[in-house]
Image 1 (cartoon, one colour):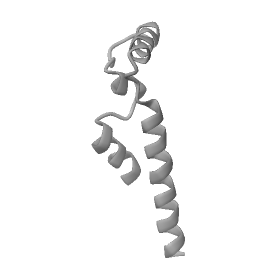
Image 2 (spheres, helix red, strand yellow):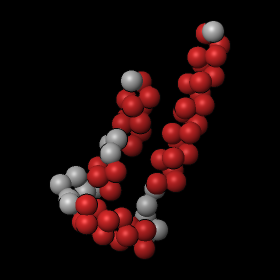
Image 3 (cartoon, rainbow, N blue to C red):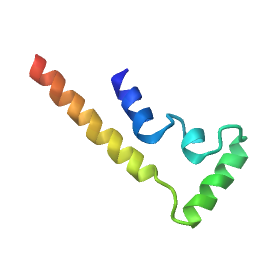
Image 4 (cartoon, one colour):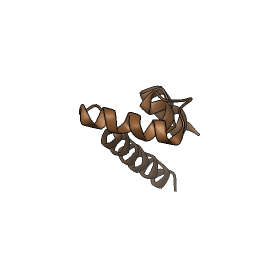
Length: 67
């Protein structure tokens, strides 16, 4: 739960729709929005994945210390 809360606090949303700024969009509209952002170099998917991976490793390390 704290992982999800931390992600939301960091990025503002937890879904691709929200992260793309396209909450009410259809799948086709989301795809279009993603491609528009990608063409401008404004997608941040790699940053989201990197943050998730680092945070997951931190949580694993914390849990291993408890064991």
